[in-house]
Length: 175
Image (cartoon, rainbow, N blue to C red; front, side):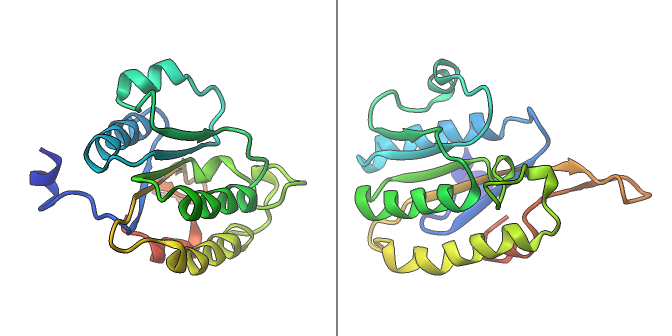
């Protein structure tokens, strides 16, 4: 049904930004996709989990493969997380890469995410990441790549609405 709804499925090798409000099913969707990738492509899934309170049993019930997965939740900041993904793509040639979530990692390891002074603090390491990613990918067998980002209420917009913390980097991704 996903292939039908998207006119052919999710693109492999193209970073996809999946943005939505908290508890809207972003992670569950990604875990299901990871399970399908491992099943169909017979290569491991690669999951970087930056969200607090990750429940592996729930993720497995959503479709995350119990076996055939490389997993970490020990990432201190955005640069480290992105480097971890680059190393994983090079080393494991995974069937899919999921980063859950960009929103949970600060660009500066000495600051909390909410102490960031500009969107550029996050845009610079993300832009560097995408420049380095291309040469590492196996374009004959590219992974499904999904980066989750939370939408936050835009308190500065008098009409309401939501915003991401991704800034200019969204140009690199199919959103």
